[in-house]
Image (cartoon, rainbow, N blue to C red):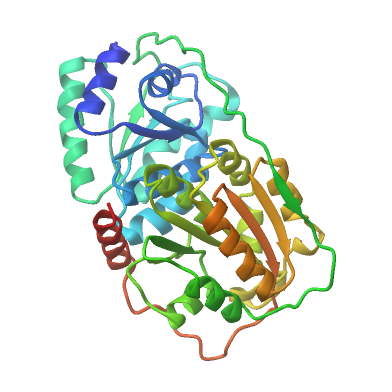
Length: 378
């Protein structure tokens, strides 16, 4: 059995002090250590945890994700379409519920059989974490080499590996919504490009623009391809979790998250996580065209969803429905002055230009230049 405090100290020695995850009984002692001794962000699901960790990595941290193997399937999308193309490494610990030959609940039986196969299919290097401390330290050195080579590495953790680590008293942040504005007039319905042009024009020298997957990133790229831009590919729904990880690690930068209705609906639990941690340097803008525009214009259910009310209920400090480009401009300027985690909901027209290009810069190159921007902005 590993002494959890000693193993945790070894993790910190290698620079792993930022954790995000979803609880599991097999990992509870390591999770308790992370909460007690490090920075820990409790995610709504395992995919969000991976995206939060990716954002923290862009901010200069060496992140760790913790999850039960049943939740590994929730993490597949960001692992294969965010971490892989952008070459963002993450150290993972995944429990082995349902290990063959070990009595467990029926819902874990199949997942226990295929956990390591899933990691192999995703080209994620992994090892069973040893219960011997000296061997575990050697494994950590190997894992760190993978991380330094921009490759994710996962430890598969069997039952009984970690010694008991009592959870210390957890402080609950007293966050609440201070300002909310809802729809009260007709919408202007500008194009996405017009809205992006306003957002882009108001960015400062210490602003990072994070654009969700699909046509949002492609249109921002056409407006300007810049070092402080990130164009999400794949990993739909993960953009605000990525923004949260970056905003928490680089509170001196302005992090502007540009989301879409289909994307936000896919992982709406992220709003609760964002509101709980409440980074004041994060602005979350939803451009809502009530459509999956990149895949043929199929309708979403956003026309029946009051996103501003949901964000307010999730403790975004400011939540506002904006009806026009002028209101969007005014709201961004106000956020730059007053700060506070802010959500803006703007309805836009469906559709985009027929000759919309795709970024010529590869995702890994986008990551590298954004890292340079973040580093030089210190």
